Length: 355
Image (tube, rainbow, N blue to C red; front, side):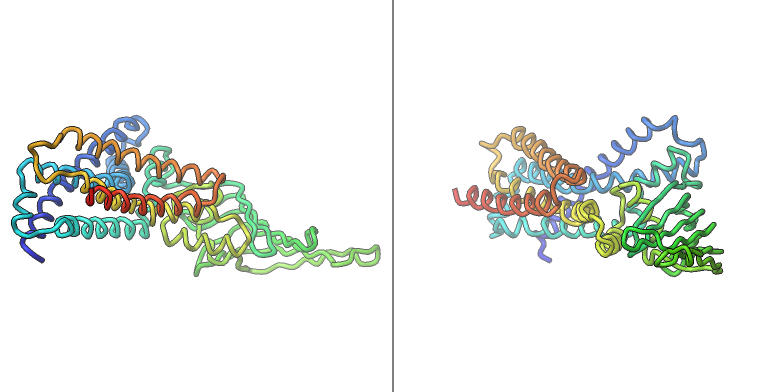
């Protein structure tokens, strides 16, 4: 790593950290004050609320901090005429820009990695704290399709990984041919085990002579392979709070059951693809920076950079919300605009540099 690269990264990272901490304190502080009356008086729960909210805010603040930190760094370089010194040392535009792009991709990769962990459920956890459901969260009346079975949970307790009053119906040719009833079920070894099961089978051909139901009892049976409590909870509620691992698992499981996976796909694209919208922004902002401060409008450059970033961020956020409504498939509403955005940014960058 050259001395110039170290210098640029040092200046940039200092500005990035200052902006990130400022945004985190602002968003977390405002949210805490707004919900202060609803948060339990327990100091431990208040601390957990701040920590969960801090990570949830990080998913919003980190991409913005990467761009705003770059804007501040460019402004300092222009004001101090440091670009002139860089050029005198033989540095090209690529030499100045490349270290910031590399560190930005690294920071975004860390953010995506954190979305693999349970921290991805931070928003859901802080909501439970506000609603006094952090230790007693439960869902009622969950109905799911699994292969040729339809499974009904009267009560699901995701934190305890158990359910109560389970009914499983086997459908054959639009007719219920088997009913399985259990009082309790537990999630272990990636399966749901129903305890103290009553199984009632109906004859295939019901006649006056043969209309007896086959009733038997089992100690336990397993069903819903791979359907983790978090997946059941979020799919039923229509939530968009998935870790990347759980989202991929839900995508595979729901696709196997022939269930619409549009929401799950949009969640994955939102966590993995959309954060990289800032890389073309860094490129565009840099292309409009001047080497000399004498004839450069610093205020206009800064204002347009900040507002432009917020507009682009808001546009992709709107696309994600629009996709969750089920109107357009995510490949057209998220991936295609991202691809167009990248190509457009490269085009305008080259046009500006060569003009």
